[in-house]
Length: 242
Image 1: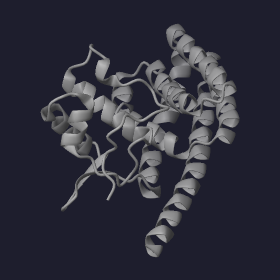
Image 2: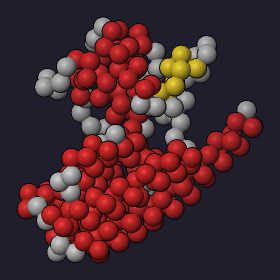
Image 3: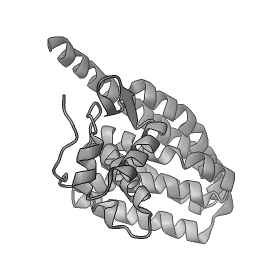
C-alpha cells in the first residue's frame, strides 16, 4: 500500500510551513490540506504521522492535530489496519457540493451586482487579468486556484456576512474539485464566463448576474460529473483486474 511520500512534491506552490503569521499547528494543517487539494496526496494514499513530522521538521503533535482536523473536514478517513488515508472525491461528493453551490453562488452574484462595491469590483477585475495571464503562460494549476479565488471574491463582494460564512467551508472542497476536473481546454470558456459575470455585476444587473452564475455552475457541474464518473469507472476496472 502506498504511504506518504518522504520527498517534497515538486511543481507546486511554496510550502506553508514558513508562513510565520500562522501558528505551527495551522501551518502544518494548511500544508497537508493543500497537498490533498492539489493532488500531491492522491485519494487512497496512507499518511504516516511520523514520516510527515520528519519531513516537515516538526514534532508529531501538530501533525496529529492537523490530521484530526482534516478528518473532521472529510479530507481524510481512518481505516482499520491502515490508519489515516486520503479520502476519495467522486461523483456523489461532487453532486452534494453542487447542490449547495448552485443556490449560494447565484445568490452571491445577485447581491454583488446589487451592491456594486468598488473594492470588490477591483478585486474581481484583477483576478480576471491574472487568470488570463496564467492561461496565456500555460500555468493550469495557477488558473485553477485563481478560478476558486474569483468565486470566493464574488461571495465577498456580496457584502453579506452570513452568506460569506456559509460559503467559506465550501472553498477547500471546491478547490479540490477544480484540481481534479480542470483541463487546458476548459480555461478559455471559463474565462469568458467569468468576464461576462463580472460585466453584469459591475453594471449592477442583478438578474443577469444571477442567471449567468447559475448557468456557469450548471455547466461546470455537468462537465465535472462526467469526468469524475469516467475516473470512477476506470478505477473500478483497474481494481477488478487486480
